[in-house]
Image (cartoon, rainbow, N blue to C red; front, side, top):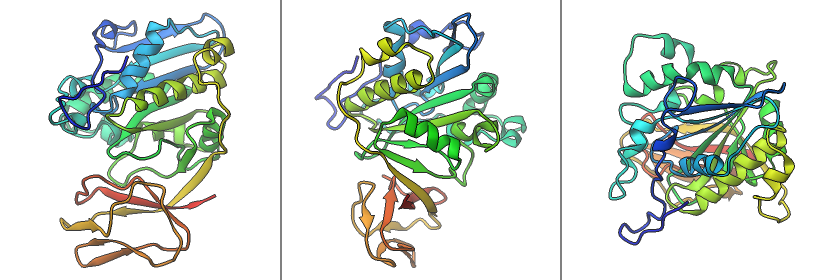
Length: 319
C-alpha cells in the first residue's frame, strides 16, 4: 500500500497505481459513485486536490481494494488533480502540487464561470456537479513539513461538529480559508451556516511519510462510520483499537499574508507551538516585524517556502 525508498532521502511514500479507477461510472474520469439503493445522504471522499499529496490516493485505493460499499445513500470516491499526480518525481517531490494553478483556490462561482483557462480549471469545471451534489465531504490533504495531522473545519458550527464526530486527528483548526481563492471545502453551501451540507479537510501530516497514508485511511473510515455510510463492523475491524485523546480546537484569527520577497521566520516552527507572550517576534516580512497579537498564540501550518501573496502562517487561539 505504501512504498518505502532509500533512493531519495526524505521521500518514503511514493504514488500508487490508480489507473484501474480511471473510467469510474459517472462519466467523469476517476470519479466513482456507489449507490446503496436505499435512502440516505450522498457522501464523498476526495483525494489528490494537490498532485503531490499522495496519501489520499493510497487511502482511496485501500477503500476500493477492501470493497467498500455504502449501507445507505451514495458514496463517491474521487481523485481530483490526476494530471499533476502523474507528473510526480521523487527527485523533485514538491513540483507536482499542480500543473497551471492551485486546484484548491478555484471554488467560487465567478472563477468557475469565468473566462480563464487552465488544466486545473478544466478539471474543476468537470467535477463541480459532483461536489455540488454531495451532502458531506472529506477532502484528503497532507502538508509540506513534518507536523501534527489536523482537521480543517471551516468557520461554521457544523464544521466543528463534524470534526468532533470524526474524533481524530487531535488538532482541529477553524479558519476562513485563503485570500488567494476558495477551497473545495468551502464550495457552495458547505460554508453556509443554514445549510445542512458539511465538509472537513484533513491534513494527514508530512506528504512523504508513510504514516500519512495510515492517517488518511483512519480519518476516511471514521468519517464514513459517523455518517452511517459503512457499517460499524466494516469500519471498526479496520481501525486502530486505541482510546481517543481529547481534541484541541484552534480558531484562526490572523492569517499572515506575505507582502515581500524577503520573508523569514526568526526560527524554525513545526506547527501548533503556543507562544505565551503577546507581541513576541516570530518573523520579518521585509522591514515589517510579524508579532503575536495576543498571549498564548498558536502557530498553525507555517509555510515551508514562504512566497509573496501566500499565507506564511495562521495565528490562532485555543477554544
